[in-house]
Length: 147
Image (cartoon, rainbow, N blue to C red; front, side):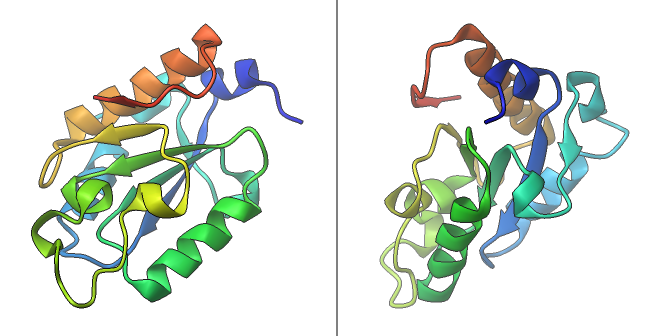
């Protein structure tokens, strides 16, 4: 099992787009560019779920994407953390009540941190990742908090 202390210094992030409007995806991709330099926190993108420490979920979930999200979460090694990024992943956002929308991210996997916004700014995404890393290092366990 991987130590939490290792993760807080060099987290590998896996991004999962559930297929909404892609606004959160664009902002997340902007946040991981050299302009915002997430590598100063040790953040790197994971090539597959078996290497990932943190799963970032963006978009509203339908039946197909919720099955994939659960499978990705199960493939990740422990300890693993989940960030719900954007209004759609948190509550369904503008798609809430739609015939095609099934669930929110916290209904499928345990969400450790939420980053609200439609879409959240890259600065907010980096702040959320940094907050999660500080929480991992603090030894508080899995406390859910909204940034």
